[in-house]
Length: 286
Ligand SMILES: NC(=O)c1ccc[n+]([C@@H]2O[C@H](COP(=O)([O-])OP(=O)(O)OC[C@H]3O[C@@H](n4cnc5c(N)ncnc54)[C@H](O)[C@@H]3O)[C@@H](O)[C@H]2O)c1
Image (cartoon, rainbow, N blue to C red; front, side, top):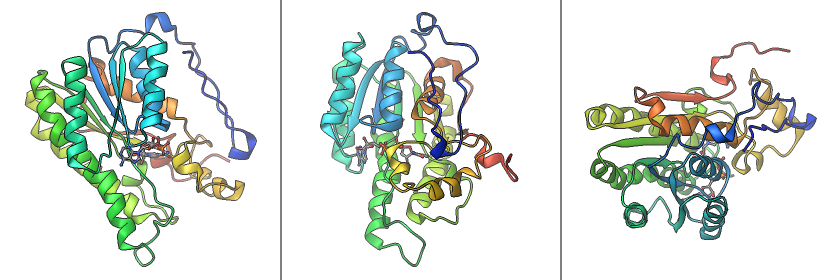
């Protein structure tokens, strides 16, 4: 439970210090007490780390993933640690699955207060406008953008029934800055998530429903590292990151806990960047 952010190895181009003051787990167990939280893409990466963090903070957690075994394994970890958790297999690009995951959360735990629409894909054949196949475009949009829409479509009525809540939609830093290492469908889908989240925040602001777009910077998760399989490719990105390293899923989870909790009660419609400074940089340190 300690905040041990693993330093990246030298091959990843830098080191990172652990936090200045260790966090006392005993003092940190009730930030989400009484809340029911649903996480999509909960089987790995950001979704898994956030599910575990939600559970540590007292939430009842519904782990949703198209990979049923991965979602179940996360739920099992939470239950073993004493939290309440359940797993639901669902593909967020399918309306019937999204309707079922929301009703499943309400059936399991009586309400839904936190909706983390986080599942996303990054296709190996996603490139520029000329090279990207229509099928790759459609698949990426269906999971990354339509999946968030469907989560909100079925989740918002549940949050209303609960008297309000917090929606966090995972966009990306690429919704804010362009890259000459293109993934056009991915970037466009994340731009859509950012705009959709902003508008929903405004629509639902007086219903006690907050909506924020989480924009992680480049992270050391499977989604990105499957491309960055050489030092050269990693350095091509890291030169743009002021902190000189990739982020960890755990560091994103900490931000999501804040957005999910009542500590962020006046935060809505935000482009919530957790990006090592990449979107702020012109010339980075040597
Ligand atoms: N890793 C990064 O550098 C980075 C940066 C910015 C944004 N993001 C975004 O963060 C989110 C999570 O990324 P990650 O790095 O944790 O990815 P990951 O690949 O480690 O995990 C993604 C999880 O989502 C699940 N998933 C994929 N498609 C699904 C679908 N249709 N329905 C349900 N579940 C599905 C996968 O099975 C997997 O468990 C994504 O939306 C991604 O675009 C990632």
